Length: 104
Image (cartoon, rainbow, N blue to C red; front, side, top):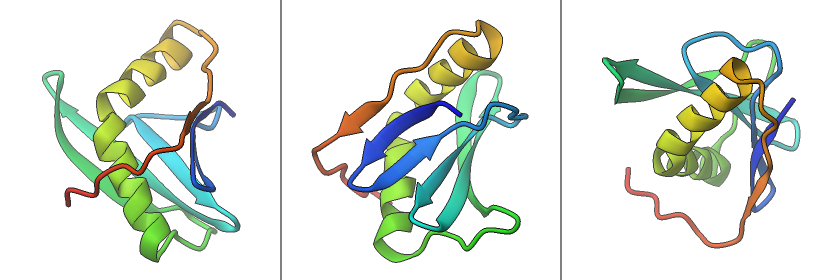
């Protein structure tokens, strides 16, 4: 379960048995949501936030932080997905200690 980012208590990760579309999970305490990155011909067309079956979804500030982080780092997330799932490289966790602007 590679952890990609830590952001003020929010953890963003892949599960080791993931499937397409490219997506990450955001966890804060007992809550979890996922963000799917939709690509069309190699271009990011959409980022969809979805609930995770059996989990209480992120809400409020934590949901907004998760959305902002995924939008800000979408290209990096795609690269990490390819590195991990295609090339089987290890992924290092990035601790983000500066606020990410919420442009939504």
